[in-house]
Image (cartoon, rainbow over all chains, first blue to last red; front, side):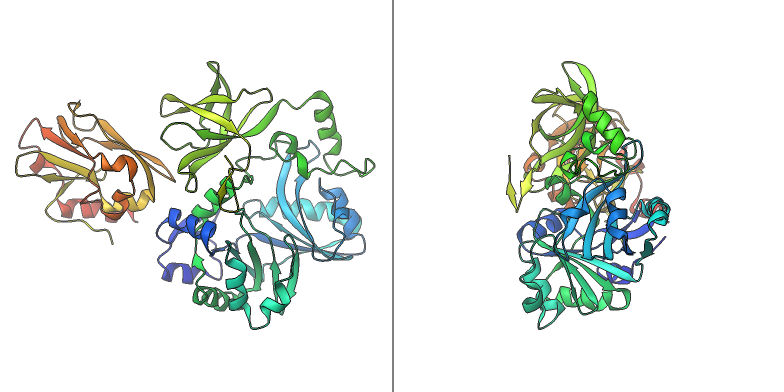
Length: 360
Length: 131
């Protein structure tokens, strides 16, 4: 199995390690629920070095990304600004979701999922040829996500004496260099914080300084319940190559204007939009006790109408929550088949939790 | 290493069983089982007077990660369920062999307890699983 530069530190911290798409990663360091609360209330950190950083450079890099992505990098007017987007195939299905950072006019950086690394790189390289864009995987970087209401203040302490001066003014969804390190004010938890890209050789020292600054190590188990509460999709569960962004709650990430921008998948999803999108992603809250699991069936008026794409227990709400794919005209309540019984659930607006507070 | 008290008996499906002075059996899940499941968030205990045969599923425990059945270790009738678990299932994570007990059973056959796995036998099963 593949290991990140922080692997030995996780083991020394008594992490429970699991196979995470071929990577030996910490699922928790004791209690996944405690780690979840730490990030909602204070500051925690994840090793996300398994994620793939890809640098794209060239004179035509902007035009290339306008073709590659369903969202439009032309929205990025200020250097360092980030954009969330889907990368579609010709059929309008989602190859991956990713964040793209505008570094300068000839240099953009993107972070894609770990599980989709190979197909993403193959696809990006294939499309890049016509634009003479140079594509480089930055596997020389480790990545640590520091998240929570106190995450930035604690990260500044760990990063260095002038970190607060240099980074404090940076707005959400921006990236900035700090020495050899790149600090992005992004994340996957619904809290404030940083994703820090650090040269591999310096990763352990940074992790240790973050520990000294009282940032608690958190496993990927908590990362999943945090992103679910925050209403963020997980690639491979909530969408894949057979699902368009219009069917998984990501309409807002598609830039339809300008109409002449010919991004990959545009023809297919335009047709889908004109014909009417039949399925949608909704949030569900379980009315009874139990935990909703992926792939459980959704029933409405006695008929099977869909399935759970991401289900879990929300530590913030002390209730089971889920995303489910259902027909577009779904009523406000449904039943979930759980362990042979049908349990009532309510359809709710996503997100479930924002900045530590319930949205229900 | 898992904590496996020597005075208890065990099942292959990771229940522990304690013989009480009045002849009833207290049943829970082992420290190894709770560690595998992770944070527990929901426990459904059996009803008093429910009767089970050895191997019947009689309780459900759910963690953030997975749902798991608890099986009756012997033939018998339920005399008590641990009601504290309804509001605080995490007791099992913190004290699997103490306050985290799940139910008490009056065994049909008084000799059934001694036929369950010893701590050494159970330790071997855990060691094999860890490989």
